[in-house]
Image (tube, rainbow, N blue to C red; front, side, top):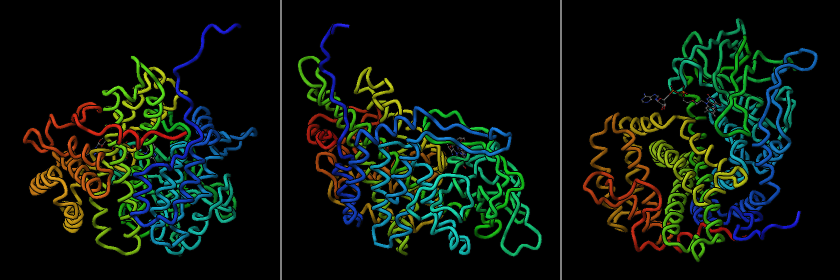
Length: 553
Ligand SMILES: Cc1cc2nc3c(=O)[nH]c(=O)nc-3n(C[C@H](O)[C@H](O)[C@H](O)COP(=O)(O)OP(=O)(O)OC[C@H]3O[C@@H](n4cnc5c(N)ncnc54)[C@H](O)[C@@H]3O)c2cc1C
């Protein structure tokens, strides 16, 4: 067919760039003690921005996993089939230790280095980060059973991805999952009905589990941390998919969920029929044990959200730098510059908070009690707030591409569908906000550590100082009904304090002017901000801010 028209005014594909070329992330990496990992993070960033990895992400999402309940002879196998691209993504993630690096490498900053790898590699695909995150997170909980940790930790930390149904101890590397949520209750896990019956005369803490789980992601994993009701109360167990003798455990995959997003990853409904599992931690202390795993995955909810925001604003800024309308590039249109700058401010603030929390995780793991106390409150509040900001951020970034943003090939629909998930996982919005309230009221040392952190930024910006003063007033009279308000204020003041101390001056100024300034006399003024993105005050240095989000290709 002869050419009917010339194609022009479409941006070049955003490919072949370094995802790790991200000033806020690299500064945070160094500041939080993992500057030594920069080259490895950049290598992963270049791979994440390559056409090859982008194709893996696309294929893995366009060809979602399928449940194979039976083999062709009618034997029950309960296996999940994945597109080869999924295996490529996981191979890279595991080879770079994103599932376990700090459990192999004792260097200070190891959790931060791993966080940076997780942050950049997540740009290739969010779905496979789920088993990566759960495997990273399982280790602190598993250590409540030193014998089991001795058996399985080296394999969980091995940098080899070894897919398939075989006894865990015969594999070169293992992946782990988490099985808590049941039909009648997810947030309220004490309502779990799955029963755990001790095996008579067994000195190894073996139980038989019978019941169901309504959501178990990455069901093709090797080991699962499961909550079940033992005679002595709700307890935590480690459940292998294949038993040490090679026979299948009583774990049946009933269905895979047909999910809004996160489509490359499998999430299953599971039934346990006298499934063999080993006790982890004390009987009746299941929540206390598994919360160690939940706290690690919560960090990844914040990191994954930062990844999604960065990917969205990068795609938007790239498009706007190349697309022209009404005589100039979109990026040069003042109102588009205001939208992009606002998206970039949100993204940088989220990245900085995520890395501060990764640093606290690292130092807490090395015995720093003040950092552990700081993390307790700051993680719950930040998880609540940044995850709440994500869907609107993804929608606005998508709109910057106009109609192209609504089309699957742009990558924006994937970001948009993924955006609400982190807020549901590991403590939905209300539950996370209530957890922040609980930390504040029941663990005064966490409030103390948190305000000590804010105090370090005192005097640098009057808007931040006033916001901190308002927060102090708010925390003096906490209530459940205002828990969201409180969590939001905690997260915003932390982001503000980090930006004021370490951020780019234009980003810090825009953040304080929009997110901290109190124009109305109420805690967070209705006119100061909080409506659509793109409402930064006039005078904001948008070109400096947007420049930091515009990728070089
Ligand atoms: C894609 C996906 C994958 C998942 N993977 C896993 C997995 O691998 N393992 C696993 O165990 N679970 C998994 N889940 C389940 C998830 O953790 C739960 O859905 C979540 O914990 C919420 O539980 P629920 O669905 O039972 O909702 P509910 O607990 O019924 O909550 C419903 C709503 O009520 C709110 N709420 C609850 N309590 C209160 C309260 N006291 N005050 C005010 N509001 C409240 C919640 O915030 C929420 O908005 C997955 C979910 C999704 C969507």
